[in-house]
Length: 502
Image (tube, rainbow, N blue to C red):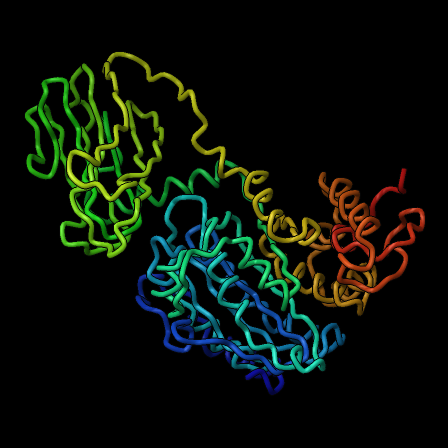
């Protein structure tokens, strides 16, 4: 695959006649298109320069696919018009969460013509995710590490470029059960994520484009997954005195239990208590979903003063491997929300032997809730996520994107500069001629608070590692750095002009 030429005229015609392609709700499509299903497949590319754009299509980044569709003509047009990349073949991938989603990985063929539009139109934007702050990027790395790069193997092509576009971390291991279920390969054991990314980088220069969000936005996305599951199942989420919501991401039958101050036991066998407590959502009796939730709540004004005890029990396994199950419990007490994360059945226990104590709540309707002593969101912070990515790809290949609308501009710039065809100033001139918004050009030039840090780190690495570690041709730095005689720094080029070296 990958032959042909991308026609801008055809692309514009397609968009004008099919302008509703991404206006349908995510629920309108309920399965992976067969052409994008990775099961039993291995992608092959005959183009000189293979490129993969792997988009996160979970709740937090679902709109990126729509943006890619809108700006694909610009990307392909500039590549051809300016000659940034020789004979590119592009594969579009969509990434979800293998622990929770029905479509954790969708993969298009490598194409160089207008069939790319069709790939994007077929992507299922599931907008799922497991609410854990991790997505299955490592699974995508494993799949594409198996790509047959024909020209590279023959010595007539070059390493490709792989762009992850996402804002969360990855799972530490490529789960062998997930590989068997989603891709069809048989692994003898789980594969460390580091190894999957190492194999990927034998064939592709790998980048992360990281659209930044505020912590408030991040919290909203994390909490929204739990609220969405509760409300979709018909449970009461808002307007409560007390609420305990349990979520997990497999078909096992976990149960939420609450002991009330009157020693009443609320669980699947006694869903309503005389004090107003009610288990209004009970799931996975038959293992019907991989995105289950259970919910016990007291409507506003009904909860009594006293101590409430909460625990989780594994009633039965529905998974073949009977592996430990990670879960999360969200507790709301008088409007204050906290979270508890745990793992149940580490030794395949069920029943009472599997019980995990979540905690005890002292509720007083007249009292103000105490502040949560623990930051349950700390693992979702930018620095934590990016530090994890820096363990598997070069730091200078991690690019923060302030405005999601500039993702394609940054991606195009990374391709052009990293392949050595242009320097930063030439690329910015091209973008101005194209009419890119001035504020996005400023972002490309790197007028941000992390500019100096990014530049210093990248130049230092380039000097130390010399010819081995940097993917761009040897020359003086593209911007004014007192003429440091080293290879051009990828981050420097992308983030823009930095102060003179000290």
